[in-house]
Length: 326
Ligand code: SAM
Ligand code: SF4
Image (cartoon, rainbow, N blue to C red; front, top):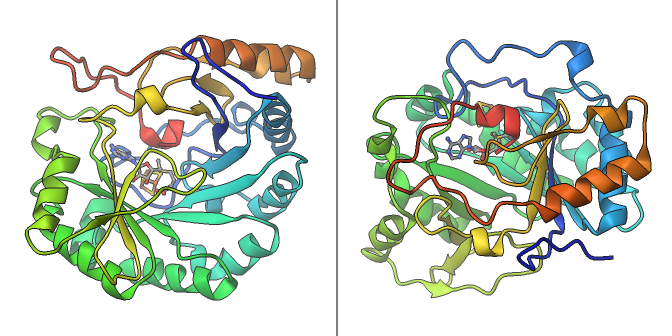
């Protein structure tokens, strides 16, 4: 079965957030004091998350990415992932993590059937890393990257949010790293999420990032594999890893968008930056599989055509990325 929206886009990718809690406080994602924690009853149970996943796969979703908050801080996440991995028809199960707990958990993640990991890493400098994440320990994240390869995973993709004046001086350090490491470094344009005056000062376009790398290296375009997502990928000839740019802000990839999102409290969204959301709780408590299928179909059919962040006059919407899952 295929899920197609009103513009003919094939929607086959669900980003499912399992928690809005996190063991870091990246300044571009969460306020310093953290977010107001949702009560236990507000957060979906694993049974409810599984019902959403199964229903979505029956409708045509082929890939699920588990995100958060930090998904690895939720109790018994491994057991839940094992159940997800065995949903018939699900072709690809991936997880995005800040990597702090990966060294301890990579082997279990691999064992239960997670197929790919994305690790967020915005600096290779311990001091800058700690400042961006408000206290995160770079050494643990690097150990997590190694542990995941030892566990059997392909080298995790590294998500790196580049911000002018914060970590843009490291663009070439990240590019250098692809010469010796097999990870794909994906440079992500900073998006306004935490309300901060003058957020535009951090913005640096994917094109500028590429130009800076091209000042030192030649790069060849890399073919995208299946489920590759919205990055444009390049490789320095002979390098083990690759370089991607995700131009969420400057070069909308909305026309190719294939995803829907569900937050850990059951809010479904057709677009990360749209205010429109649908509360799935009425179809989960008590469970109503047919009703849930119908509402998911409706969310797909009313998916917005594009987001408006880069438009003049864009008004900042104050939401934390940790609640929507990035
Ligand atoms: N905690 C996990 C992590 O950090 O990988 C998963 C959740 S996090 C919200 C998912 C992704 O969103 C991360 O790669 C993070 O860098 C990205 N993100 C968060 N806030 C962002 C922002 N303001 N602009 C661009 N990307 C952002
Ligand atoms: Fe936590 Fe990920 Fe947000 Fe950083 S980006 S605060 S690690 S949820």
